Length: 310
Ligand code: M3P
Ligand code: FE
Image (cartoon, rainbow, N blue to C red; front, side, top):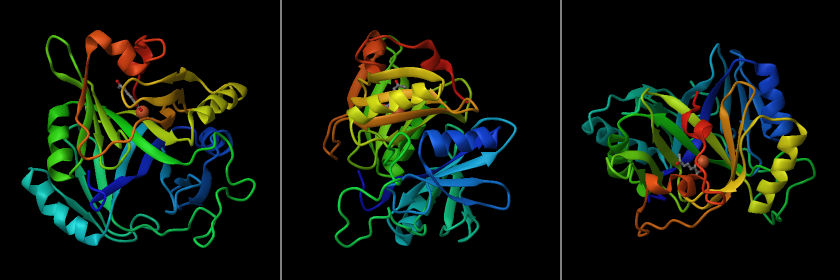
């Protein structure tokens, strides 16, 4: 864990094939706040309790999936400290100047062993959560919390190969902890790995896939498991396609619902889960308990959950 190094997933760029329907989904149904539409038609959103300008970018495209994701780091010195470590790991690093991405400082960009494009940045304009910084109270004005009552972007699950290389990169270079992993009970190979740079059970996770650079889901944090059940009402009301209804993960112990945006990209709402500390030992699950590891309340593995990615 490195609360003064890499902080959190600060941005995900999701490709959408139908922007009109996607705006309805992310804005009206989910309740994210649109903060910008740029000249290329990219639409930017923030979750209400994030101070930074945006965390979600929708990119018009002819195919769904994730374009890139970015972690925010504590300061500029962290970027300088990490760049040679990434290169020493054998990964090429590209520089992106400040301002190329809206409201953002300079970025480092590179490709993970799993094929995903990752960026690091230290600065993004902060516009606050509407409550101010002096005597802020506990809830914002009417209308700020709406939709599924999403507080913030929580974590990403990505599909690809070279999972053990990704674990090595994230633990040795970015100073994450391996909080949990799922292994095949006979072959012992890693099927899913969960990595934390904070006190949440995972900030990013990878699931083994035959193809590189696949997107499993982006997860949004709600305040409580009760809010997850209330979110299910709204998901049903608007006929949002559900992958897995309210349940609780064995891995991370989070309360969850999985559903799809209009382009087939998977979203998750997530709440609670245990607190991860730097000395929390790695928890290991194996495929004899695949059902309980993924969905503990009915201990049933889902074909679609394991195999549908964009
Ligand atoms: C989560 C989560 C797998 C479990 C995934 C769990 C792929 O996405 O948020 O805890 O086994
Ligand atoms: Fe998740």
